[in-house]
Length: 103
Image 1 (cartoon, rainbow, N blue to C red):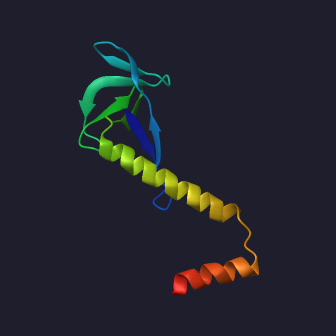
Image 2: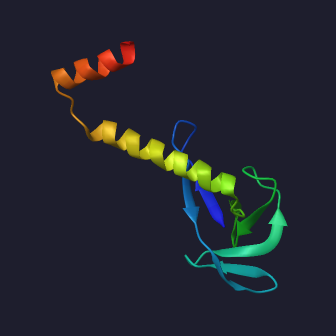
């Protein structure tokens, strides 16, 4: 199962993945300790979500191959963004970057 969080529209989507380790008639307990209500609900992210016990606005969803691909792309965006945020470019590096984009 997976959950996706985003702090505002301009933030990256951050995915969390976990697997079900215990299943009862009413709850599914995930490996990360989250307890999910074992009753499908309508979710904003996917057509069907499973709400977190005592946090009805937070949903976990079934993982698909498309979800894994989206998470990989989003993680790559985060890595690139954080690298550029931390990097101090020299003037020569700025010229190289500029010339690569202007071509």
